[in-house]
Structure formats: structure tokens, C-alpha cells
Image (cartoon, rainbow, N blue to C red; front, side, top):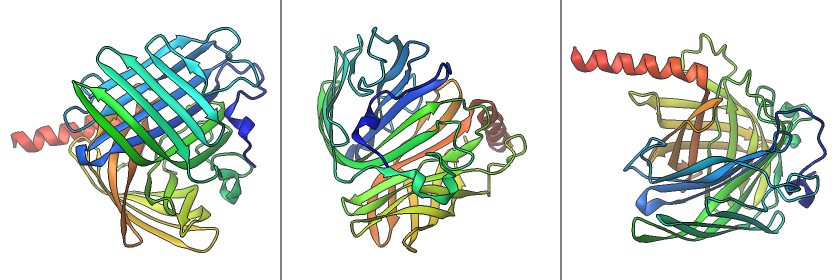
Length: 337
């Protein structure tokens, strides 16, 4: 059971990899613009890695995207104490994160000479606890994902406000997802997976966990199917936990990015989700030291409706290097042939 106090720092041992994190995503589909505020606290090490990222088709690397300000900061004394808010902090970059009503309302402001933001996230559903799935075996993630942390939940909401960048003010008003994890964050065994999500309305959407069960040393990347371990399916206002299914990338680009992704999964209510997603942009997100992401605003078709969300196609840094080098080498050979 998820409680409001789960948005605050938990009791922890002395594991230096203990992590308290949370992500809030948003987008503006007419501009093919994506954004996120992402927080990773490492309280036993005394630092927070957090920031704001924005991207659209004009740039897809962390060094040329619309905006990227993820940096590491020392945690002010006392802010990492048990019972303090994970989403109550201020950085000298100009980012201010506020938990106004735990599990219901959060505010994000950002003030930089080149980029400003005023955003509010409000929930339209209660948090979904992935422990409902028998595949999680008592943890917040299914087997194979627990390097992210021992506890996890997701929640649907709406992000509203505005962003000013490059002399333009962009209105944000979109359905949004957020997640929250806590526990030791190791990323030593996790190879490849995806965290696709979408909402067509406040009554209809999904968030999926799919992780490869292949040996990352020999994973062919192309033509594979990744088992769906958990996540949720929201339909007609009813939430079911996803317990089985698969995610497939039907087509990849010359650098390995997903171009067409399908999901077929069954939930605890016996319903089947069938979805097909086509990205509208792409960010090669390499800010993590452990993993590499193809991160994309995605237009999803499911149950006869269209919704927006994302693909977060991730790889261990060591294994993503092999994939990207191999596919780029094949592309170079094809071009010069």
C-alpha cells in the first residue's frame, strides 16, 4: 500500500547506493516537444542529481537538445533526513521543486536567463503499486528490474503551466505520468528494457514495464520480444495491474532507435491491452553513468483511440555501446556500398 509519507525520505541503512528518486514527464504534441523534471537523491553520499530537460526534433543529443540542465549538487544539511520531502528542494541552477499536497499536487519553477518554467502537476488517479503483481515477488519491481530499487510506484496526472525558451513562451497542458522509486540503486545486472506509457484521457491509459530476459552479452537487439512484468492498464476508469505480455520493436533506425513499437499485455482484470507507438522526436539521453536511453515523445494507438506518452528504451551503458557501434557500422557500410 502506497501512503503520502512515501514521498518523503525513508528509513535506510548505510548502503551508499541508496536512492530516492522521482520523474515527472510532460509534452506539447503540436511542437513535438518533450520535457521532464527528474530527481535522484543519494542521501548516504550527500548529493542530489536533478534537473530539467527539454527536447524536440531540432536536437537529439544532451549537448544540442532544446535544454539540458541535469547536474550534481551537494544536499543541504538536514534535507536528506528521514521524514523530509523528496520533492522539496531548491538548486542554485534556479530549479525549485515543491510538494504542495503529497500524492496530489507538485510545483516546479525554473529560472535561468535562457530558460524559465512555471509548472504544476496534479494527480487524476491514486498511485499504482507494482507490488500488486505476482511477478514482483514482494518488491516494487518485477524480477530483473530490481537494480532500480526495492520499491516503486507510478501515477497519472496533468501537467499545466508554461515554459519560456529562445524568446518563445510555450503553454503546457497535457496528461502526464510520474514515478517514484526508493532503495539501493545498483544497475549492475540490468541489461535492456523499456518503460512505455500513454494517456488518451483521465479514464484511459497505461504504463508498462518490459525488460529483456536475454543475456546482454549476446542480446541481438533486433527481432526480440521483451516480457511485460508489471505496470498498469487504465480503462473506463478502472486500473488493473499488468501481469503478462510482451513488447516488441518492429522497426529500428540506423542508430538503433525504436521507430515502431507494439505492446500486447494482460492485466489482473483479464483485459488485454494492444498498443502501437510511433515516436515524434528522440533524445539520446546519456546523463546516467550506468545506462543509455532512446527517450521519445510517442503517439500511441490503443483500444481505438489515440494518446500521447513516451518510449524510454534503455540499455546498460556497456551493452548499448555494442549495439550503437554495430548498427552505425552497418549503416556506414550500406551508405558507401
